[in-house]
Image (cartoon, rainbow, N blue to C red; front, side):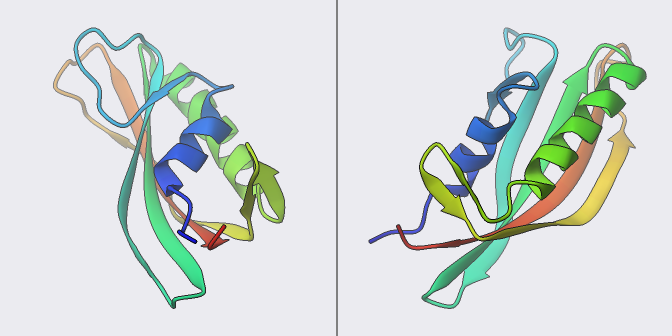
Length: 120
């Protein structure tokens, strides 16, 4: 048995907020959410992935609203299944913060979350 793919689990969870992806390009629709595993480890029983969630939008207000929705969805996913994958627990490691983007008309908020998932 393998640990679930944390990026896929988070993308499945957040697809109701906006388009989700692991890599964005100029053709990626706005708004969108980029999900990336940035760290974490396991103890051979439980995986503790750290996942970065970036909310891109055309206005700061929209990006903030998306970030709030994402945080609520991730934090309430504890002890539930996401597309058949059991998520034991979740937590916010770094709350949403605004990061300037290369395109000054775009807005991005980034947050880091931790999930706890066993082999499935």
